[in-house]
Amino acid sequence: MTDNTNAATPEVVATPPAAPAPEPVYYDVKLNARFTWFDFNYLPRDHHIVDKTVFDAMEAAGVIADVKQLS
Image 1 (spheres, rainbow, N blue to C red):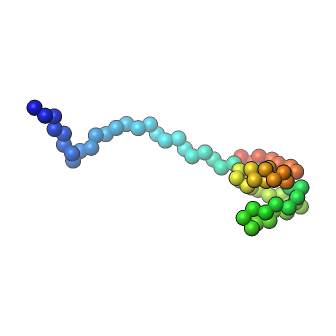
Image 2: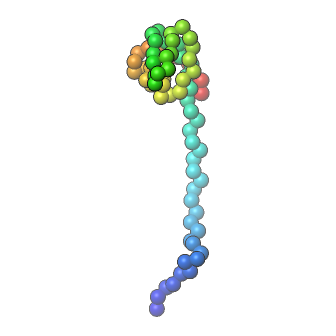
Image 3: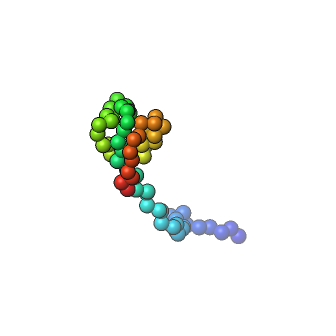
């Protein structure tokens, strides 16, 4: 004898709740040289609020004079 199931009622499987997405990280940076990111110029005389991606690019270019993590 075969075991038949009703295809119209799907089996309910418990899944754990998904973790919330991590909060974005922002930095307040002051530069020691001009930096360009996708045709946007960051000038050394100003403070700039940037996200992690731009911060990593600035750090790799060696233009960060002062930094403060905001979040």
